Amino acid sequence: MKILKHFRDIDDYIITAALIGTILVVSANIFLRYVFNSPITWTEEVSVCLYIYVTFFGVSSAMKRNKHVGIDYIIRKLPSSLRYILQWIRLIVIFLIILFIFVFLGFQFALSSTGQTSVLDISNVFIYLAVPLGGTLTLIHLTYVIYKRNHYYIKSDRGVY
Image 1: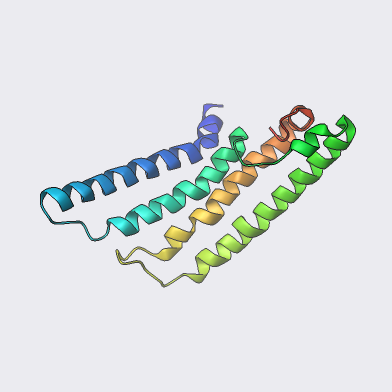
Image 2: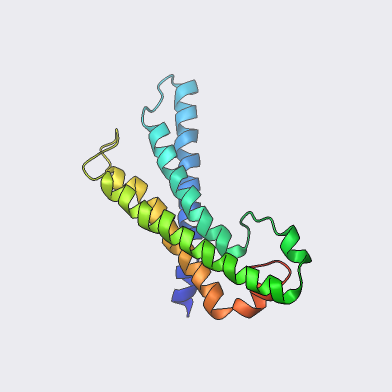
């Protein structure tokens, strides 16, 4: 059971590591630039790469906690039965959009960059894999909601979660 909890939190671990890495690299570059007048040339590329991971794994973390953006004022005013049906439709549409755009097109995008490398000689595939991996984790969290907790979350006033 503990393994599943850690797997559930893997997006948070990745976000934390990427944010700490970004802070350390940018802080070191600021220090070296202003104290020793010798900046690190690759910090911008590393910080952008890490921020890409923060962004796409952040989608997964937000989905898990119901912290994603949603406008549901009108849906909250509807009768309970109609709200339930619309929530199911919304879940299915969100699932299909994430599956197609993040996972399917994200993998195609990552694989299309095979052979391309960054300035640091890191394969662009590694950088762009943040899109489908973050999307896959988002789908796992959304599937958990649909399968295990659907009635409680869908019928609640807050919507999905």
